[in-house]
Amino acid sequence: MKKILLLPALVLTLATTTSCDTLHTAVANSGGTIYSPSQTSTPSTLEMISGLKQALEQGTNKSVSQLSAVNGFFGNAAIKLLLPPEAQKAEATLRKLGFNKLCDDAILSLNRAAEDAAGKAAPIFVSAIKQLTVQDVTNILLGGQKDAATNFFKRTTTSQLTEQFKPVINKSLSSVGATKYYGSLVTQYNKIPLVFNKLNPNLDEYVTQKAIDGLFYRIAQEELNIRTNLSSRTTPILQKVFGYVQKKTS
Image (cartoon, rainbow, N blue to C red; front, side, top):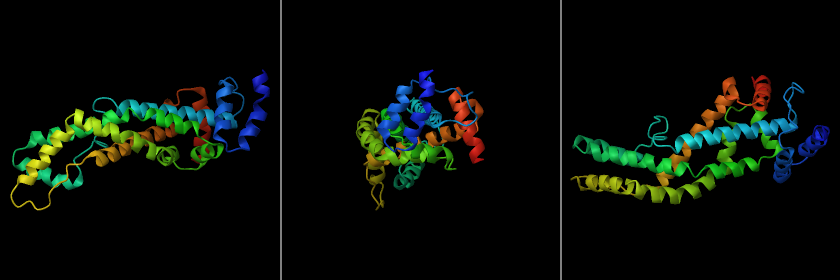
């Protein structure tokens, strides 16, 4: 009962600060017991924060889990990595010359590298979620943008994801054979007579960016799903907060 009585004071504190630490600590200390979706039709500040955090954790965990699995990238046509644009002409030429397996192996290996890197994203998203301010919560939930949470992650995690992914991609490109396959493809193409625009076999930057793009694509899908699909709201607080948000922003 004491925690319920303390709610107005906690809400007032949160509403008048942009301190990430204060917000995170207050929500963590509440233990979730102060939330009762049946208390009122309008979510409290803490309920809004808790609901958004649950949604972000659900969306990022699901995205990371799916993309880091075998065929997470390779089996998804929307985000499957193809050869770099400058190499696609070479691919077409090599396929005409009968090097289909070489091209297929190179493409598969790029996707395996992206899948390896995706598993490193979870702690970065957890850290970003902890940095949410009350203003962030308001903008994400009530700003009217269906991809506001995804944009929040792009703004707060892209540089860290790039930093974390690059060494993993580099190592993975070697371990899954991408460096070998793509290097062979480049070498084979560069041997063709009258080829003047030689290809560069460096893949790290390209695969890193594509892996991050694919990750944000999946997160955006999960965000839209929880905003619009009742069955994706798997807890009472998610049902209350996003039911309210859907009414306010529709």
